[in-house]
Image (cartoon, rainbow, N blue to C red):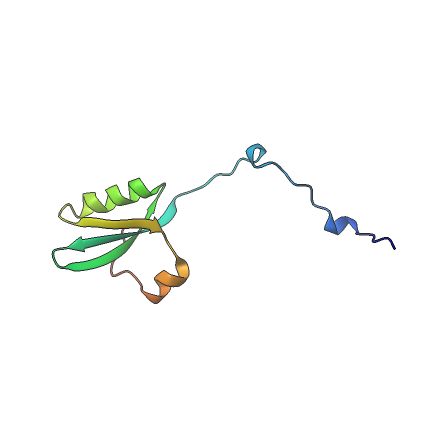
Length: 85
């Protein structure tokens, strides 16, 4: 028994190092604490450190609790109060 797969099933695998991918800014959720209130903001940045520094520059008195990539499903259920750019 032979199985004949047509040309539509064949996709050559390209090594990742041969493919140039242009990544733009990613979205990060930055958790922070201001006095007794905790909140999070969503920031566009190239990496997590830059996202944290953007929030710290905007709110120097804030304590940064966490920085993570934005989780669209989870962040949609608990939207941020403000949005930083």
